[in-house]
Image (cartoon, rainbow, N blue to C red):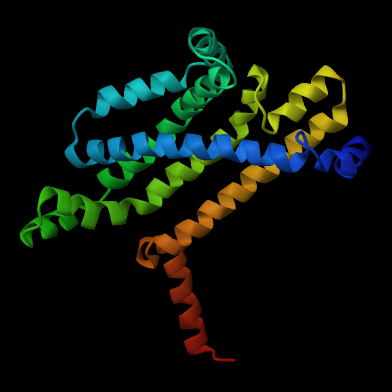
Amino acid sequence: MNLLWAWLSNPENWQGSSGIPVRVAEHLAYSAATLVLAALVGIPLGLWIGHTGRGRVAVVNLVNGVRSVPTLGLLFAAVLVVGPLLGGDIAFLLPSIFVLVLLAIPPILAGAYAGVEGIDPGARDAARGMGMSSLEILFRVEVPCALPLIFSGVRSAALQVVATATLAASVSLGGLGRFLIDGQAYRDYGQMAGGALLVAVLAVLVDLVFAGVQRLVVSPGLAPVRSARRVRTRAQLATNPT
């Protein structure tokens, strides 16, 4: 703990191109790019599978199979294959983002797919009875009802990506993983502990941000637990105003 506090309280570690703010910004950039790309693939694919019921077994099994591959080994393999074809930092950045996207797609896809599939069939029948088309049912009925599980998948992916983006430092990139790699190389255990703590704090903060966005976007009627608590609270106030 003394080494950790000494490293965190050292002003030199908060300045310059290798300081904590810069590393946090790099880590967030990697994570944000990964989540955007994974969401662009996982959410539409999950919605399509849940809406049509087609390709469910094949796609889900394929994605889970990719997920079972060791991340670090896949990263080194991607760098060895793609790296010689490119130049500069992009030779390490693209393989890293690619591997992180593969890691992030499964929870996002599963959340979107489960959210649409779990909708009450009566809601779909009612929408068809009102004359809605298939796309209208998807975007006006299924997607709003599936938002809680979609956000759950995105939040799960965000936690995994923020934690795993530390591996980017193992192929000469930046981010908070730099503190772990450099700390291990120089036997600076305070730096290693500080880097691990920063990753954990960043993951919690990112999850809190997504939780806040989810609370703003998702209809209160789709949060039965919170709604039930509000009903109980109002009932208690009505029966016992004091």
